[in-house]
Amino acid sequence: MPNIFDPERTARLYGPGVVQDGRIQYGFPYLPAPLFLDVPGRLLGDVRYVHLAALLATAVLVRHLATDRTGRAMAVLLVSAPVSRVVVNAYWIEPLLGLLLALTVWSLARRRPGWAGIALGLLLASKQYLVVAVPSLASAWRGHGRKALFATVATAVLVVLPFFALDPVGFWRSVVQWQFVQPFRNDSMSLLPGLADAFGELPGWFVSGPSLVLGLLVSGLVAWRTRPGPTALALGVGLSLLVTVLFSKQAFPNYFYFAGAALILAVTTWPQDEPRRQTCAPLSQGSRGSRDIVATR
Image 1 (cartoon, rainbow, N blue to C red):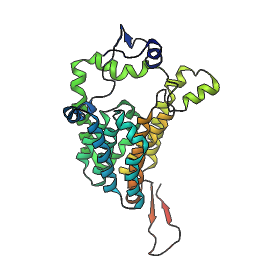
Image 2: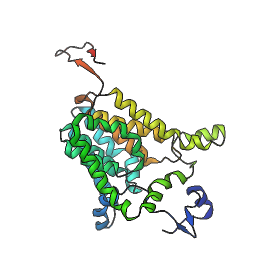
Image 3: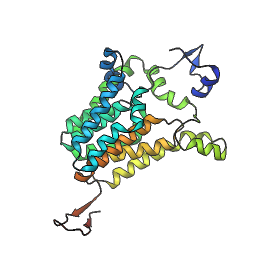
C-alpha cells in the first residue's frame, strides 16, 4: 500500500527497508483471525461496527460471569473506560481479542472445553504478542485435558495455515520480520521513553529483548503458582501482557485495553474460582473472623 507520511515521519515510524519507492513493502502485520472476524463489518460498510459489538458482547459476558457487586461493576467499567472508546474509534483489533478471551473464560467456567479451545485457538491466531501468555494458557489445557488442547491447536492451524501456504516468504516478512525491523518509538506508552530521557540512548538489546523475556517469566510464574482454571488463565494473560507492554519499544492504548480486559475477567471470576493453590475453610454464617487457610503446597 502507498506510504502516506513525509520522509521525516517515515523515518520515525518505519524501520529500514519498510518503505521503497513510496510504497510499504509489508502486508497485514498481524495474524489472520481478525480478518475473518471483520468480514461482517466490512459488508456493513465499517469494520468498527464489529469492534463495537465485540466490546458490548465482552461486557455482557463479564456481567454473566459476575457473582457479586464487584463483578457487575467490572462490566460497566469495561464499557465506560475512556480507552474503550479510543480503541474502537481507531480500529485497533483488541476488542476482538477481548471478546475471544472472554469466550474462553466463560467456556472454561461453564466446563465446555471444546468451545474454550476454539475461542483460544482464534485468540492465538490473532496477534503475535500473545506468545508471552502461552505458559499461562496451559491452565486451560491442564484443567480440561486433551479436548481443549486439540481444539486450540486445530483451530489456530486451520486459520493460519492457508495464509502461510499461499506465500510463506510474505507471511514471514509481514508477521514476524516486521516486528523486529520496526524502530523504537519515543511516543510509546511504556517505560522506555522515560528511561531514554533520563539516561540517554538505550542499547538495542535492552529495547528489543527484556519485554519478551519478562512477559514469559511472569506468565510462567502465574501458571506455576496457580491452580488451573479460568481465573488463572485471565490473570496470566493480563499480567504477562502488562509487563511486556511496560518494557516494549512500541506500546499504545490498544495494548492496555486488552491487558485491562484480561484483568477485569480475572477479578470477575475470582470469587467462584479461587486461583491460589490453597484451600480456605468457609466462614460460619455471621462470623466476622479471618479465614482459616490451609496450604496445599
